[in-house]
Amino acid sequence: MKKRYYLLAFFYFVVNFSFGQVPPPPPPPSEKVNKADVIYGDYSQSSKKETTKTSGNNAKIIEVTKDNYSDPVIKNSVSEFKIPSNESTNVNSIYYFRNVENLLAKLDTLVSAEQIISLTKYKIKSNTINPTYLDSLARKAYKLNEDKKYDEAIVVAKEILNQSPNNITGHKEMSFAYKHLGNENLSNRHFLVMVKILNSVLKYGDGSRENPYILNNFFEGLSIYEAKFGCYPRKVTLILTKEKKLLGGYDCYHIMRFSDLTHWLPLLKKDDYKIEE
Image (cartoon, rainbow, N blue to C red; front, top):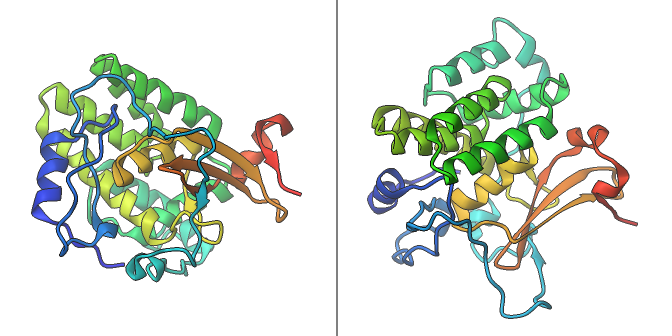
């Protein structure tokens, strides 16, 4: 899907983005702005993590599906990923995993959506990422930024990116920490790479069961919600479907979106997820 970045959204993103915190809902976009293209920054000065609030405990949660979108642009936006997996191990290919890792290490925003997703798929297929470890690092970096321990947050975020160079949370927390340390250059560069990765995930997934987000680990889904939807999921879940696919579920404003975390399944116990009958 072709993304359009509007001046107002970009201004909020660069100047006010707060990656360790959760923003209140932003001002409503004008009629000319496609809601699918808006990425929210943090308009809050609060250091405490907030979640979406409900008017009652029995509010119905609606799953995103390919048929219940009200916006036809979103409904028809998911692309089919057609890059063969063997391209990631072909040293002469632009999708060779080391080439992609080098681009990301240089914070090169010319890296393509296809290269980014191919790297995630390679890491999953080759079993070279540990989602449990990445989640623990992500929670630690998030908390350190909340506690204003920015130098320590950078160390932890670098460890995330060493294992998972295209990790949304890693670049998100790096950008936040560098911003508060006064290093606008590195903050902006990590921010722009994060946006590129986020848009790549949204190009090939809509959060439905049919097209779940392609992520490295569970916490990346929380980071997507903060950046894209302007909220922090108040309810999360893990579901093993009848097809033996492990879905990570994230609920904000009673709308549930999913990521495909099947590669995490061997590291979990049966009590860690719900089994659908």
